Image 1 (spheres, rainbow, N blue to C red):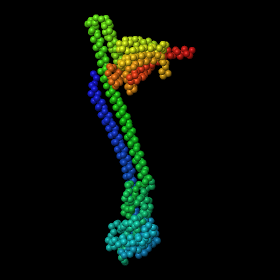
Image 2 (cartoon, rainbow, N blue to C red; image 1 turned 180 degrees about the vertical axis):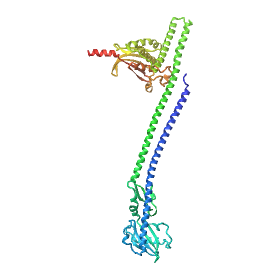
Image 3 (cartoon, helix red, strand yellow; image 1 turned 90 degrees about the horizontal axis):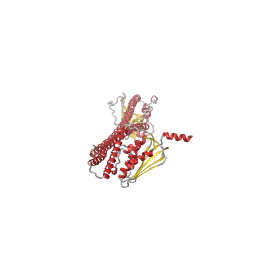
Image 4 (cartoon, rainbow, N blue to C red; image 1 turned 60 degrees about the vertical axis):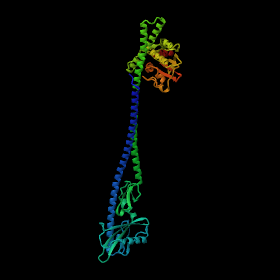
Length: 522
């Protein structure tokens, strides 16, 4: 029994929902893949940054220690000079670090330049006034400074440029408390102290502290507070390219995996749809076959019982009933043969006995057998068989069955114009000589979409004009298999409402072709 329509509707709904979820799954995998790609890129960037930050922090630490050591050494030497009441720095102080730019002494009221600062940048007078102003706040009561090296730092700006001062308070035995002051050239700190500690080729640079800096920086502290270590523009660009390449690689792998998944899903959905369609076709086939079997059997039984009861007195009427019984029995036989042959083909057990055959004679005999049914159905029918047809290696019964199916098909799908023409002629197709059997009708025609699937087993077109006619969908499939087994091919020309023409091409017998070639050679 065929499945009811609502069951098929439910199955189609389930498949529609399944396809929707498959699409959602694919999109979810794509989002997850992109997320992990960005996550991996971020992780890669973080690892590189962490390594550089460790290097930069080490450089900052070493620079601060080195500068503090140099600063302590300079203050020791300066305070020693002041302790000896020197008013200028001696020659032994000429090898001071390059970042020393001016040495002063402060007694609480006056500032004495022991080593004047350079004239570049800040005017000496302005600098002296600034130092004098700053030093007024320096305690001279002998309280110890907070730093281990006994010094303290003062910071400021002159004309927008940063400057630093370091000082140490000392008490002489024979005089007032004196403060030793050293002005630090902040610009010289970069080449003198910090840059020599940077590993070559690491991609780090020393820059002035910028509060608006967007790239990560490691700021220095203390007397080096105006400087920071950060990656170079070249390194930033290189890392950006590396992150981009890695992200692109992960995205490419994600897209490839997604494409593979989508293709697999497409094949799966396609296969499932084919299986569902095939199951539906087979279910419809069972219903159609049941109807096809039921109709002729009912007619045979009805007219047989009528004849058996002796209720028909007229010989002419009895002959009419006999003819109906014979026609329906023939129809029933053809149906059963088609089903059995299709089952044999599906099982791979269908075999053909090939021998040189006169195709014209086979078609003529089949036509005469079926012509009475065509006349009873009100058809105009014509047969044309050309002379001197080449012999064909064929199974005569199989070819007869194929032609009978085409005639039956033409009869079934004809409406008002009941007209069938059968033509058998010699022809050459695809470089081979042979015989073409054409069956032409003026029926309802075939749509281009249905034409491609016409010879599939169980297939019936979705056209309502086709559905309203009983059928199994096996006839043309059997015709194709028979023709292909004989080395030929089947094609169809059709236009809706204009009719159809089916052509079977069968190649000439191989033995005859060989004999002809030998004769030609002689």
